[in-house]
Length: 250
Image 1 (cartoon, helix red, strand yellow):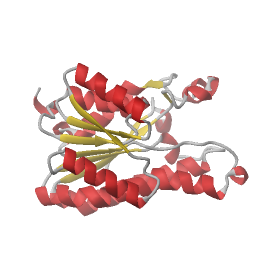
Image 2 (tube, helix red, strand yellow):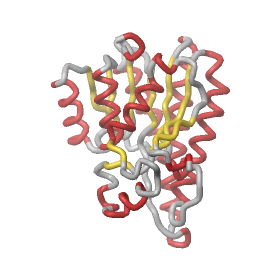
Image 3 (cartoon, rainbow, N blue to C red):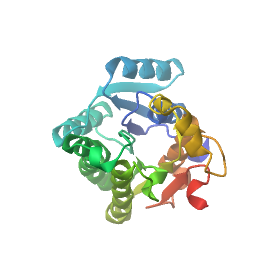
């Protein structure tokens, strides 16, 4: 398997009970990692874990809502304990993506988006990256969005939170990269998941603006995440990789 062999690695994937997170968990498990599936919904999480184990993978579920620093601290500690004292790969995938006019966003809406999309990754990296650096190796992949790159009406809150995550990706690469921790980001375009199903035809309309002309499947985004998490991306640091069917290229 060479560069895609993740045997012996411990991978924590947040928001892993559905969509891109679940697809990423499955791919990392398939490549040999011990995958820690983190999410709010225990029943969905256990189903994901059961599926990974049925496929021959090693997986465990960790309940976490990541709404505050204490939740992130607890998740980092539980993941480290379950991982036998370490986490080698962190995928910051958990996020919320409400769309709507700026004037209709309540203070609680703003807090909810920034708490999960910005603060949770920040606190998890603060807890896990130093230990990776002490060991001299690790990989962190942040899941962003193509609308962090350009303005879209109704997506100010969501896009700005992910733009912050992109800058954190680069700052963390500068901070932890010299000690062997690679930090990168993936920017998905419109993707078919349980979460985006409510968009209906809007998802296809958004996707039609890109050269690919269609939404992504979750597996296609997971492939990019798994690439950045693995040794095949050993010289990739601080990158923000668009996986958006070409939308930000044109």
